[in-house]
Image 1: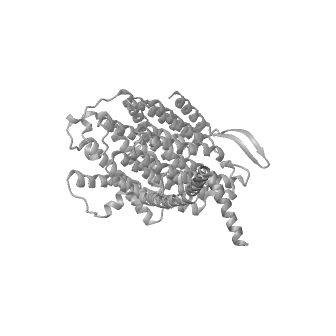
Image 2: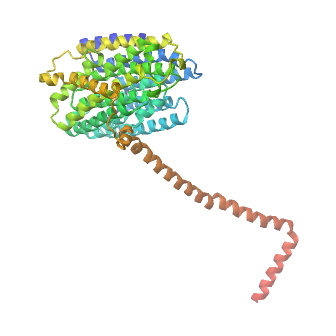
Length: 548
């Protein structure tokens, strides 16, 4: 906590005086290639480092009570610290050779944390997570190999020649940030303990890809890269919004909300507004970690139940925690003057001004409505509606679990306004009509009215039939990215098994059988040595006589 406070003060100094500090130490220099330690300290790395350390401190403090009865609590804390160290390496090192250390570290430690509970679901989720992220690791290694030909691993030294490896780096960022078609691993990673989900889905693993693309934002001056990322991010935004409205698992709804916000950040990044993307990234990290900690406290006190239909009436147990959850939800869909409003409203207004494609505009508007809808739906089920009686649950609210939530709540309220003045010291003109300016508020009001009709007034929704399965299963993304490859792997493994059987039959088994038969002849010869010798001599003589 003290380290994050120091980083915060130093980041304010760096931002205010616009300082850039570069620390470089050359290890090996071979011909035109240098292998070196390379640290970059500027306003982006310092602010993001403060957010990561601050949320990590809150999560570890929260875990002391949440994982209190777990016998491997110390192992869990060490893994979380290793996870944070990998993220720090990624943040302060703009050298591709050092980034691969933090990048691979995030993938490996995330796998260990996802399989922490050691169940079949955890193992399957861990395999989906690590295999999806390995695609990004391969892309980073390919870009590293490409950069080796030009003598430098520094991202900041790229020129036009290096833009050829832009596809590799953009695909690496898309895998880590779970954009279509690599979206299946993010909801699957919910098998991890809730403190891990709070850290992974707010400020570390899913933001690693976005942070890399923010550093490489000059790629999006090329239209082909910009259009490619915009297309996939807009689809991810819409798909996650629809999936969250049809999901019944509490933690997966929040995972889908993370997916939709990552799609929005990628969308504004593809339009060339790196500052807007970074602003929403840090605001999303704060209120999403707070929302996950609230969800963990609810699940912890409901004996591990995560089904929305089994939760509810939590307002009776703890009005303060429900208030914090409502505050995080308001910030999530951009209610005026909450933390997320300052960044999300800015992004949406810029999209309304910049975008001239009616299809994508409709996707953005529908996705915004979906975000508001699943926030209201989640609050409705968890805070008010329930089929369970209060006698089933005994709520013991630990102070170590409440304090991080209240502290994050205070930061969510104050941080948006403060950071908007700190980051945007220049005038960025957004010209919109009055209707376009007010459309976000109108959408919130419209969704609230529709939500009242469909849930409070008990009007049945539109019957979707087979479409429900398609929309609620992330457009079969899990099947396309995991099941098909696992099935092909199963067939390949059978073929490999047959190959090994033939090799066994031709090799060791055949040798063993031939040696066994020869040993029988040898044993017979030893047991009947004299008779055998006479028989052999007699046989030779008979053959000679026949030949003569």
